[in-house]
Length: 222
Image 1 (cartoon, rainbow, N blue to C red):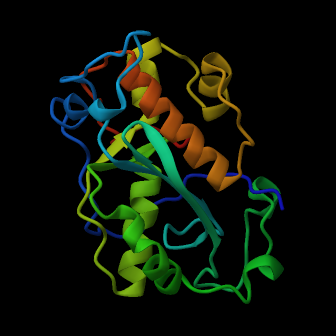
Image 2: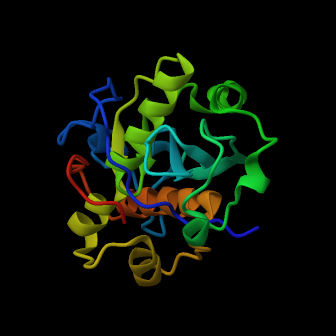
Image 3: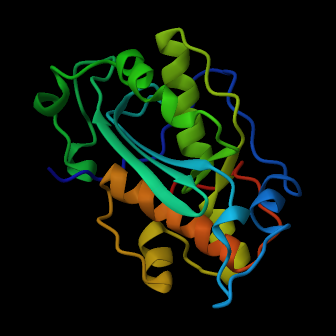
């Protein structure tokens, strides 16, 4: 099945969301105390454990996640990949032309609360979540948790749009642009592929020695 990225969705009401990574603190953990191998690459021990995440949405409401991809990184290496289809709270999918997911694909799938309970252990011991335009995925995660009556994870987000701009001055900074520049394999709009690409961007930025992570607040969905 082909997954394609949903459009950015508006937030119809105020809600509590996971925090944005402080500019000076989170990525200092990634690169500020790095050690280098003989080949000059970032030593795995200097990269904290994190999870890259990517959501696809069914409609314009932020609680309408219909797919999610997560990639866990430990010691500078990907150690686990997970992807799930999700039954959204409303019985229609408006963005099928974008991400390829139809109502028939998700009608019999678990709802977000069930999916998240299966994946929660993926976040154990992580320093942060990473997403390509963290504002979007952060908002979707918060909205889905609110609708499901769950607490969102209290983890900061690192935004790879801002990271790519700061590290390599890549413009435009849509995920295909960044992946083409860095030579990362991407099946765009597949949430697992997008999440893995996001993880690769974080690791490569760490290897480049970046010590600060820009915030993710007002960037448009890329």
